[in-house]
Structures are given as C-alpha cells and as structure tokens.
Image (cartoon, rainbow, N blue to C red; front, side):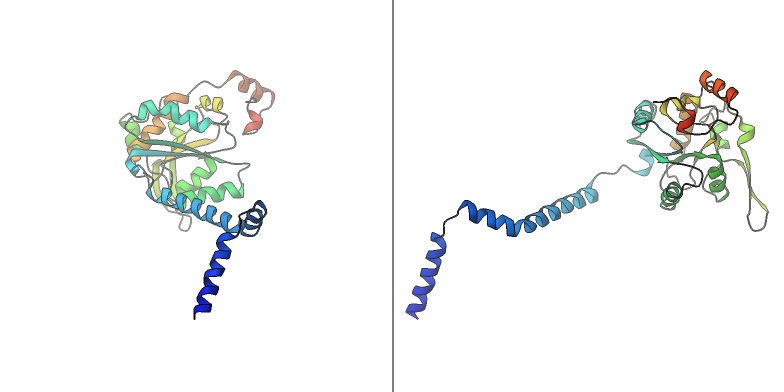
Amino acid sequence: MQSESAYAIGKVGAMVRTKITKKRVQNHFAYSFWKYMLWALVSIFGWNLIYSVTAYRPPADKKVDVYLVSYSMADGAEDQLAALAQPEFQDMEELNFMHIALTDENDYYANLQMSTYIGAQEGDVYLMPASRFRTYAQGGLFIPLEEALADGTIDPSGVDIDKARMTLVDDETGEVIGEGIFGIPAASLYGLMDLGIDNRELWIGVTAYSKNAPNAMKMIGWLINTYQADKPEWLVEQESAQPSVPLGEDALPSY
C-alpha cells in the first residue's frame, strides 16, 4: 500500500515538473484546435439565440412594414425612405422598407419570397406590379380603401381613381365576390424614380391581416403626397423615341 502511494505521489510530482514549452503549446493547439472552434461557435450561437429571443420588438400597432416589389431600386433607398417618412410617423417606433427584387414577371425566387412573406402575414403595405396585385387582391389580400379616401387619409388628387376600382370574381363560379378600390395605382409617383424605383405598372395596397391598418393607409397617403410628380422629361423623350420602353433599370438613368 505504501509503495502504491509513493508511486502515485511520484507520478503527480513528475506531472507538476513537466515544463510548458513552446512546442508543447503548439502541439496542444494543433490537436485541440477544433475544440476551441466548436466552443467559440457554440458561444456565438448561444448569444445570438439569447439576443433574438430577448430583443425588444415593438408592438404591431407601433410599426409599419412596407414591401417594395419592383424591378429596380437604388442602393440605400430603403433607409432614405424610412428617414424621410419618420417625421410624419413620430408615434411609430419602427418604419421598415424592404425590397423584393424582380428580374421579370415570372421570377421564381421573387414570387417565392412574396408568397412566403404573405403566408407568414408579414407586411402592412405592399407596392407591386399590377398583374401580381390583381392576383393577390382576387385572393382577398388587400382591404378596401374607400374610407381612407373619403376621410382624407389618402389624398387621391392626381391619381386616376377610376382605374383603381376593381371587381373581384370567384375563379370557380364566375360570381362577383367584391367590388371596390383595393389599391392605388402608382403611375403618377414619378418621384420614386429618384430612388431607382420604376413606378410604372406598380400598385399600392394595405394587407387584410395588417394589425396597423390606420397607419398603413396613412403610409399610402404619405407615399402619394411625397412622390407624386410630373413625368420626367427624359422619360417623355425616351417614350417618344421608343414607345415600348422596358420596365426597370433599363428604362432609368444610371445611378
């Protein structure tokens, strides 16, 4: 028993006397590097998880999310829109402008993005091409805007409201299931071209699931008041020389 104890003590002593050399440290990290990497990744993931779970999120009636589905947009336009709109929405804690880039009408990825966001009931306001707007309106995505137009929340001056009136028809029975103004044509919002957004063929509407419809309608009114403008002279000349001017970046001046 005594010899075993002496052996154990001697072994511990030998371990204590083992020198920490540069080579030993290099070997340690060479063989144990993955452990430190794994520990770092787990720590980062854990911190991000904690932050995402505990981070403050404003209530639905204190933010407005706007999705801009267009063929083009200048870099930083989302931030410019939010900064410019903020003074008119001082009681809102967040104004978010998000861009969904379309390459063409049948862009699979962009249409998948739209379907995903809408399926998750994200976005209070959508600005999108007329053909897609009509499809979603037919499915009940957008709410009527007559009340907001009547009380002045949305000023229709300069907008062809007659073109905004839509009749919704059941695809299966052909019966009329609704009629009204479910969106506003953005055809007169040529000021958006300064942000790289080709406004032609775009419509704006408020989603039926929005939990902040009053401010969403106010946002449409703000967009109209802020970006309604005469057709730029360069576009008039371009359309005169080429009647079928393509939509998107090809139609806009370089930014």
